[in-house]
Length: 251
Image (cartoon, rainbow, N blue to C red; front, side):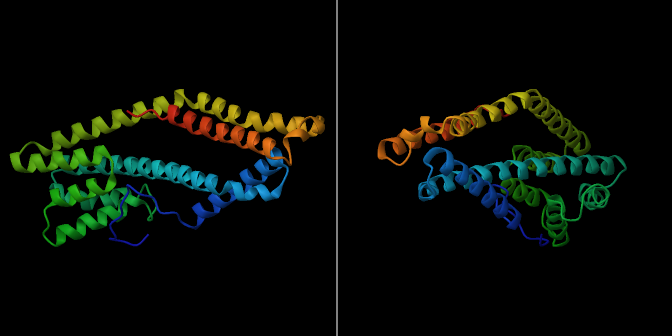
């Protein structure tokens, strides 16, 4: 990643690896659906709308992963800043120290380093730290980062105890992430059950095709059968998206 380039974390830009993952998943789903539901490769044309849904779904997952990783790295940065403040350094100097500390934990291409470089570059240009943090918070789309920027801005104006304020912020973020991890652990088994349920319709049709292919012949190569199979396939996709929404629990 290029340094000092401001990134908008509210959006996710696909890289080559993501396009490859998207293409492989779409190809596998299309081949399976064409074989099981239509018994015809011409049906691939019907999957153009599904390609759009597949793209949006994968992008939504990647965006969630991106924000989660940024939150984890941001929490680590705050913990390092608190350590520096307790050692008597200024808040501005603490950001420089945090970059050094995080270098022992994360790879050089970690997102937080790009943001730290931007903040440190802004400080060298005599830009107010609170404005740099506000910009970071606005671009991140993450409530914790926006709240931290607002807290620093308020503390700078009121002259409050920065160490205590930031420590409370770190504790709040840590507690929130702990709750999120606990919820994720509790619903892991339910997510596995949901995946199995989504695979079952394909498995049932595959079983029927292998053991009693004549039973499904009436649904292939005719308009009514194609319409019924299309409705069935749409219902599976809707159920999959609905289940994904139910599994999304926000703290």
